[in-house]
Image (cartoon, rainbow, N blue to C red):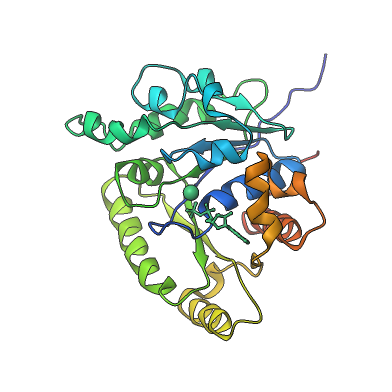
Length: 273
Ligand code: ADP
Ligand code: MG
């Protein structure tokens, strides 16, 4: 008989920042791909009505019959919405514009902030034959009920921060929200880390922001910075993670380094690929 496989414990990370355009979706897709490439089994949960993570992973709109909307509305099981991607070991629960209406529909439901937590719980409790080791939740660009669901469901928050002037201002607000969720809904929630994105070494402001963020947040800030790289921005229009589109480019290499730094930081042994 085959040896019993001990499932790796599930880690649920919310990729959150209430500012749009800071690299949340790009990080969800490419960190997810890099983790899968080193042997982790990864589920990306698309919680943004824009559905950019779904599109960027090659799941067209007409392929999204069941989405995170139906799952959170209680009309479908998570497993029914999950789809494989072109990346081995990487799956996605896609989103649709229907999510826009969910906030109103859930407004008076007592469990409105903990729906996602309930939906994800079985992944950890009854992991199945091919258990996920990471769930990455791609949050919308706002501190709305969807983001609150992500923070209530997560073990930790990963914050992409664009190297630009107002970066720290938005971060303080996000940290306050995390503290509130900790107190009210999810005592185990921590800040997993801050990832500096779209770094441009030729830009003095970019370097100054990096220095300020490192001073303010200390070792919460990842060593790895994601450079501004045109290949990263081209990849989604091909429905591919940048690691599939151009593995050698600086953006792909940075996301691979980020994945191994994340595994180290979490104190986990590398999975056997
Ligand atoms: P968010 O999900 O926070 O709104 P996105 O991940 O969608 O942000 O990124 C915003 C835009 O910036 C997208 O067009 C994306 O392709 C681009 N982008 C993200 N990261 C990089 C990068 N490292 N280099 C170049 N463009 C990037
Ligand atoms: Mg996004």
